[in-house]
Length: 251
Image (cartoon, rainbow, N blue to C red; front, side, top):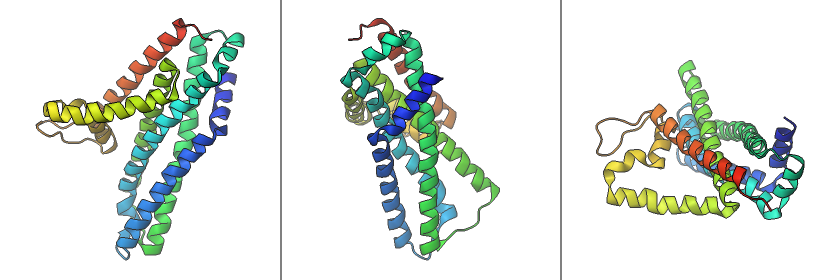
């Protein structure tokens, strides 16, 4: 647990972590402000909050990927990984401690981000509209959406973490993400529209929206199918990166 606490403190001490949080909140603030102003008098917190949570979740997941990649990439760049292994040679323990520290820190940051996003939306509704009815069903939906958003951020952080760990470069995760967006998302849709069920974007949509329909398919993509698919991708990348870390020389 000592290693985990060290990693959490290191995550919180990084400027990029909090700069990323600020970026997400600024984007959320601009979006909420514009929508509330344009719909002034007819803007309801109860109607807009579930949509805002899903948008915030998508933004935070992308930010989590960057945070996860830079979190471990910085250690490879600075050469501190080799120093760490001199007093803790059990590589898989080091790997697990860093991943757990990243995840625990991301949960705390995620709760802060979602809480502030809802607070921004609440203030906008008070200023330009109304709060609206908040039945138990809506409150449960907000809690579940927040939970799925944080889980998605953990997957995003794990993907960035795994790619950076395997390649020893923070930029590799960004390059892979950009390459997938161009080749995977756009290319697959152009070449084989029937493969859309396996696209990351559709599975993210299913996870956040409690299921989604797929073009050209009679069966919908359920929330659990999307979640299992995304989790499997993150798990596979983590296993590969851990295996490489356990076998390769560290200098």
